[in-house]
Length: 91
Image (cartoon, rainbow, N blue to C red):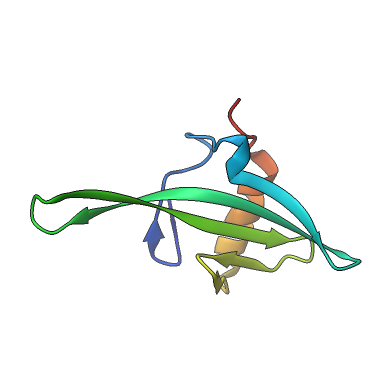
């Protein structure tokens, strides 16, 4: 799966653990949902592979961020909303 040019594991296929998903209040009217997703990257030529966790967020007002950067593309925002609606933490 790819958002903003960054490829990561599809959380629908590999559900995150409960500690990698959360929901919190930010002010009186805003709720923020957060999900950590895993991205893998090859290091050099045959050196190895590194894994990094990236933060995906969405507010109840529709604002989304990925790895700390705002998501502008409407199709990507729709995909993020679908992820938060369907992904449940792995038990």
